[in-house]
Image (cartoon, rainbow over all chains, first blue to last red; front, top):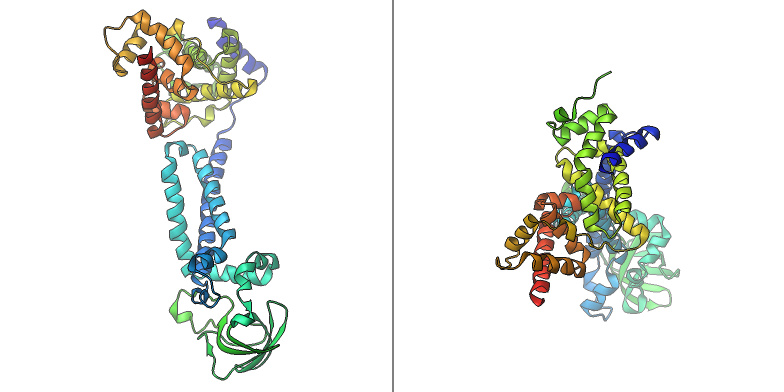
Length: 245
Length: 195
């Protein structure tokens, strides 16, 4: 047998015209894993920038007004969607790194650590560059199902009885008198004397705002503070005044 | 046409050189196969519970895969680690096909004195122990312990592979291999002491 097995295999190789697969196929496959690994890290970092943005602009000052404990407030407002995305991309990048030619040499703990560190560092950088706010704003504006996923967070701003109301300005007279259509699809006349308006917020028709104040009657609300619905993060201070809401 | 050199000349070539030669002319692959035929057949038998005939079939499959993937051979690795890795994968695939776990049943014929001495010293087993008793015990203990421990023990003590080579063959970090071998030794010793 020992004499024949190798010869049989060689004959079979010749007979079936088996050829070594070209090197580029293997290089391409390895490159594919590296690309998937890198893409997952970047997408994970984008998710992180959104998580940071959402958590930083979480209206932390309102949990007492809503009568929640801090713990309940965190549970309600955690961006679960992006957290799931982040973990999903960590898994994809872990799998792809392990599949690269030398990936098996790295231990699992170090890969997980790299994933977490890259997500935090790159995610924070993207957040400070304003990517989190840009993405969140554009997803909220253009993709209604995305907005619905954060129902609990938005529902906080549909409680006129607790002095919280959010919506889009439909008629604008002045900073002291305008009309909005609320998240509950109800029209409200917003009146105020000297409300605190977010420094970069310019009130105008079509602008989405969050208002803290008190309900005066069925469709009249007195505003004490007006905030942008999504607060933009501007990295370069000099650009702040050039980029109003 | 270039004449294939004599086997004695070829034997002076390293595996890596033979791979390069094979890529230019397939007949050289015969020398690679000859070099590994016995070693790999023994390895397949040691980590599987299949007959010699089935093991030969698997070995043919291994060689064809090796040939098809020659361009994937990473020169940073030892060729022997790479070919053992392909063999390991083919054996595992075969077990998945037949839905059976690998079991070592073919140790007895291969346990030579060198292997036993290695195990005695490495496992800190009394030097005075009877070789025949140790051989019988090993046979029984190997049937008892988990498959993942068996394979690292086979690679370490029967195939005489270093930790780094085992890491390259099983595609696991060296730290994991070291842990597996230590646990395997403990399991083995635990079973041995019980006897």
